[in-house]
Image 1 (cartoon, rainbow, N blue to C red):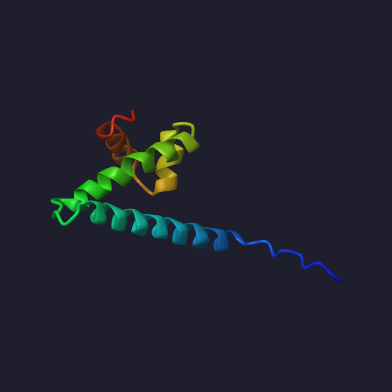
Image 2: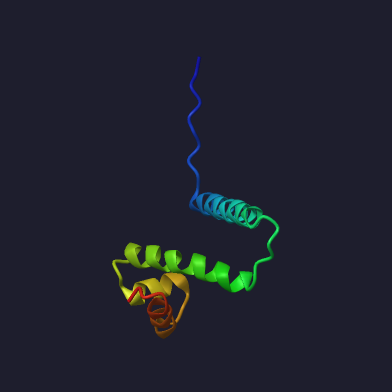
Length: 93
């Protein structure tokens, strides 16, 4: 009996899986949030969502880059000044 060797995933396959996983997590969280509202209608949901997601997102990226603004801004595709402003907004500076 021969054992099948597990095929290594390519970097693109890993990124695709991560994107799908993140999308699924966001979808589940939003469905749970809306269900927990118990019929109440939220206001300014878009702004609320962005603030809830952006702060921990930036915090994780900054930790990953050892708080190197240049490296983080390159990873994020943001101008350094924009990143600094976002970090200040969320008191992550």
